[in-house]
Image (cartoon, one colour):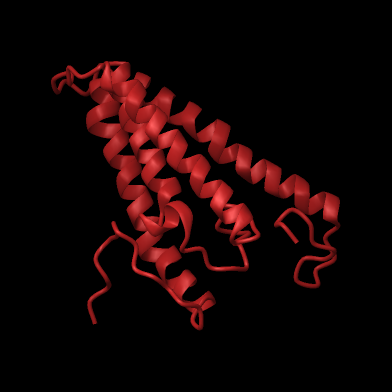
Length: 173
C-alpha cells in the first residue's frame, strides 16, 4: 500500500475514507496553514524586530526554489521508496536512504527552512530573517532530535542505515 489506504487503523475500526480525510487534513495543516501562520507572525512582529534588513532579496527566490525542490524530492522519495507519506503520525513502512535522503536524512525540514529564509530575504523582512526562520529551524531540530531520530531508529532497527553526506551529529553516549 502507498500510505493512503488502510482497511483498518490499528484495529480501532477507522474506515479508509476517514483515514484519507485525516491524512489530507494533516497534510493541509503543514502545506497551507503553517506557511500562512508564519507569514502572519512575521508581519505581526515587523514593528518589534528592529534588526537590520538583510540586503539579498534576489537570493530569496533561489532559496525558495531550492527549498521547494528539496521538499518535493523528499516527499516523492518517501512515496516511491518508502511506500508511504511524509507525515510523522503516518510514517512510511520502508526506510529510505536513496535519492535526496542520501544527501540529508531530513530533506523536507531542510527544504522548509531554506524556503522560509528565502521568503524572508525576498520580502526583506527582518522579522522573518531574525525571528521566524530561526524559530522554524529550532522547531525542526527539536522535532528531529527529540522525537523522529529515536522513533526512526526504533522502527528501522534491522534496516541498513547509511550515513548521509550532511547530517546532525550523532547522539552522545
